Image 1 (tube, rainbow, N blue to C red):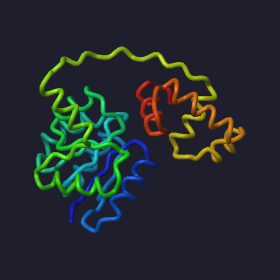
Image 2 (cartoon, one colour):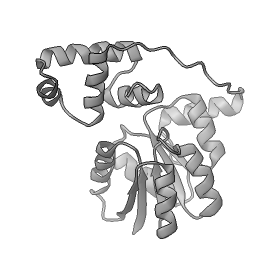
Image 3 (tube, rainbow, N blue to C red):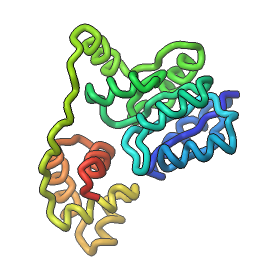
Image 4 (cartoon, rainbow, N blue to C red):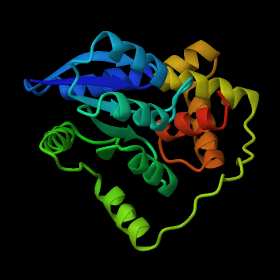
Length: 214
């Protein structure tokens, strides 16, 4: 039995990961945490964890900061970063922090299963696009400077729609809560995707949080 902890500030995404893991008898989710600090507190109470599925962007303490501390205190625990973004800086910092693998949240249950088993057997689970970027970084190392914060301007209504999206609500629920038609909600979401330069709601919510829009 592989004992797993999940760290993510989005409760909807935690439930999604738990659902994917529930297909396999070999896995048992022993604890969930809403950020790195919360995870460290829970590990102090229960160190009997084999592997952590760690989000990167979280309040209080992000996944990379938490990985550094966990690897120094509990070196036996394997850590797979499970995140939306595959940008070079996140990959570089996660590997430098001691992460054992790097997968994207869109992963299907079967590939997640294989990634966990591979990591527990001493391998490094990586999404193909991540593996390619990692090789590229090794061949051509570049210094990462603090990127300039993108100026993203959303209307108040678009921010309200994003906040609803972040709670895992569908278009009809959002329309009902904000007293809008579903088609208007859909149009707002299309505009949000364009302004944020993202392709789905997971990316939209993550980027909005990164830029402190919600």
